[in-house]
Image (cartoon, rainbow, N blue to C red):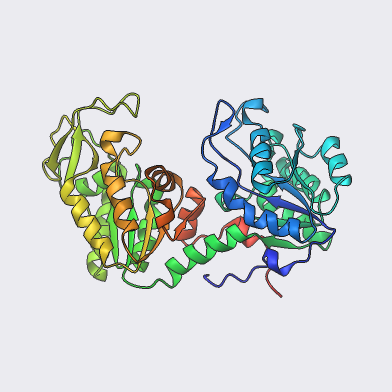
Length: 413
């Protein structure tokens, strides 16, 4: 898996050709302003390369969940503006709600070599995410009709077989075009692939976040691959319950207690370390709003959680235990926060784990989603070897699943 034998942008010649690039511009917006531009910056190397080579670069992406049809609040217009500033050249925005309509077609026809245009939010079509027979194919074909070649650089969407991610490749192939991966995809696959298939040991995996259910396969796969598995976040309480502890009002998935027991047995049999919290920061009830700093906390041992309280972060002894485990590691993969990190009072565990990772010489890979947000927010981003741009995608990749967006690219000859 690590040596992914797929065509990359370095293997194709795009001079004078129309290249459709699927990016991940699903950026957070507040009142029409972009609050985190990580994903825009991550897309620049591929775009610059194609521009420099004289391609006619047509960018597309989704943004948001688009539940109630097209709306200006989820338009990609702010992205085009920010991209233009970053590239130092105009990125022409096509605000056509049908994405591939006459305005888009006309704009593509008028392009010169090195021009860049950005199409409207692909989800405005409504059929972007659906099965081919529900018109996903029709949209994929219209996208392919705009271009000669296709480049997938949207790792954050690569685990979805959507029209603009995987569907389009079939029609590009039919007309003899290339389907390649961009630099960002390549980097993600190299880092995540190597970490799982060929890690420099000791290999430590840290999993957090709220639900065990979201991480079932990942826990299982990583126990096969890693030397130490560290569990934090809301999912830790189901493991503590599996050890026979009282967890009070903490997050608990009753249906997964047996699974957690199995995983603890599996680790023991395989001689792997499975580390769970030894103490926890408890609160009376979940903060509302989530970032309300006026909450009282008590620290208790993990086997002494009072029945009327809930655990919301790892405690100081656990922080020390986890930081120690990371110190001797050579490879660390981290996915999911250690507590309710959105709250300043309950962010300590997540912050200390980020700090421990920033001080190690290991290859440190942050698996997207909340962990990436936390590392960025806490100012440790530049100390990590790699921060994945895809939460769900990096999880599925770590599980060993084939991602449609990667799978659909052409193999190297």
